[in-house]
Image (cartoon, rainbow over all chains, first blue to last red; front, side, top):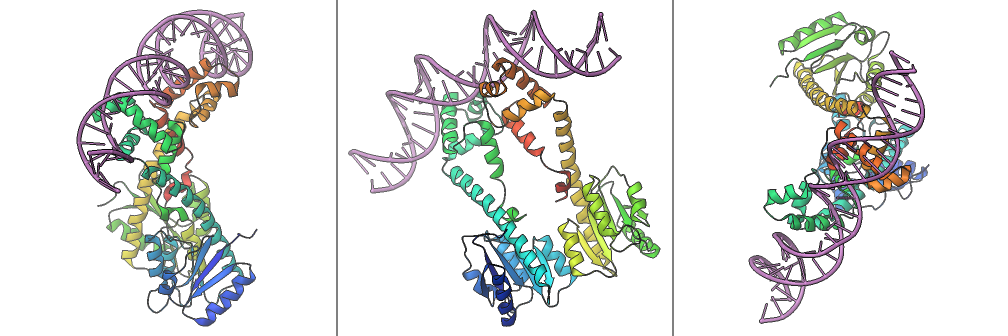
Length: 210
Length: 210
DNA sequence: AAAGATATTGGACCTTAGTCCATCAGACTT
DNA sequence: AAGTCTGATGGACTAAGGTCCAATATCTTT
């Protein structure tokens, strides 16, 4: 099954590599956009659908591994497939430990590359679904007033209204009101759902790519 | 800071490697136990404290990568550091993607190996802590009767007692009784805590090693 | 057959949670 | 100065959760 609306980005300083990858990946049914340098990619690579990045390790300017770091620290992370002419094992370990999908030496097998692309797009699809949910949750959380958020933190530990009231030195009545608004704003109907939501809220965007 | 009570297992068919690793790791302050083959290791390698495994990729009989598979499928998993004379990149990718801590080519730097050992033991320590919690949770869950467990599954979705009662075609009264027993047996005082516990229950032992 | 675990239910009662309506005060904006 | 947002409260009720005591029905195990 092909991933719909997918885009594969290629960053490699070698024109011939870009050309051949472009041809190969298009023939597999994916849209491709190529860049000759990491910076060019960083400047404009937004895509609404699932996407992944095929990245040369060694490049003038920002190297592939450096680009990986940058992507990880930003939230523009997407699965990366490394390709390289002169790769070594320590480099491979580093790249994979940071989440790269594969690390292929040139010349690589077309099948290996396409397999990796499939896996990468699969991962990104999953990650995007999760990210959407996370964003929705964070939007909800941000709609809470400071006091409401404070009350929420107590509610999800299982504290009773009266305990929360005592802790905050306010009346139990007030706690109920805040609590009610929290449930409304978070669109949940029970403490159980609230706990579930807020548990997920702690997931970091970078972890989502598996 | 040294990890207390740690044990490092070494599986390598080359006696000289076993000897030198034994010396190196002991000098770093860890207990070591060496094995000449994967099977010998599988038969007896239990250790109560944090431990990790230094594993030769290429060995007669069960290979290192095969042993990794076996460990992952069982719950005796421990962090693995691969060492090899003739490693290649695809092999490295495979090993690291399956969670290996490092993949070192012989001859390797003593520092690299010891760093890896530290990381591995660190991981195992963390994993053991989590596993203990998980085991406790599962013991609690197993103490529930089938009916109680069934009710629990509904409770943690946030369903009201009356809804659960209707679904199971029993009286709300009965639901309350079961629910009460569930809370007791799981040693929690609120639905919030119950949800937290049961969420963790889904974590698989293999995922714990990060 | 007796014992024990499991499942079910009722009654009585108390505690919590949640909601509708209404009020009041301080901070900030227009 | 008027309007808005946020926070804090009270009264009055309704609904839901939780507990103690007690009873009954199965089913399995000894």
